[in-house]
Length: 250
Image (cartoon, rainbow, N blue to C red; front, side, top):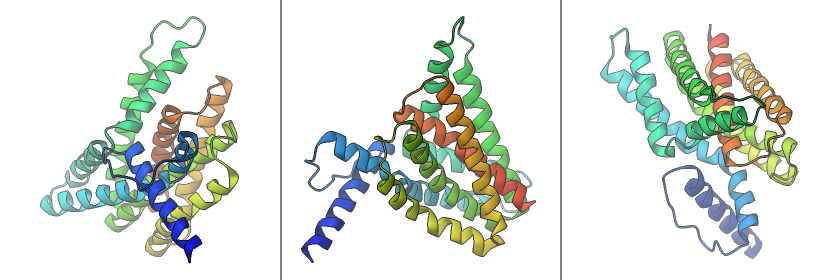
């Protein structure tokens, strides 16, 4: 019983640390007196759990705006904008900013770089792409959109952990990677219930391919793993997930 209570205590601590690390929320973690490296790795492994909160907020805002604008042909696009705005406010644009900084940093490191504003271009294109894909998904099926929106925020925070393990195995241990995958089971199962197994399968495949492309890009530039790289990979995987879901929803 004591071991179970200790495990639960550590789980709550790690989730609180993950919320403080990846959102504007600042919960007080119980007994965060472990070594910073240990708590840092533990909180990183709970990132998909943060995706649960961010995904639920995104779905709630999307649903509220859609209800208020019911019948308006621009409703899906407006709801997508406000849903994205809500997640940006919740996370402090942490991952969007990370994509911008990572793209700029990697571009500046190339021989002959002359300030091409790659970070700005990458950020604008990715955000515009996500908004368009969310609107397209909502036009196809609002229920499918809700399930995909929730799952995307969870899965896109898991795939960077897999990328971290491949880039630097010490950053995320194999056991932690396996446990983190459990956060994705319910969101992907909901997508199966909504539109069948092909719906999450195609979305997940697109997100994985996007993550692999990003991993290849990072490896070619000998980039190490940090929170900035995590955020950049998360953004690319989230967009890839929406693309796959939109293709599957037809």
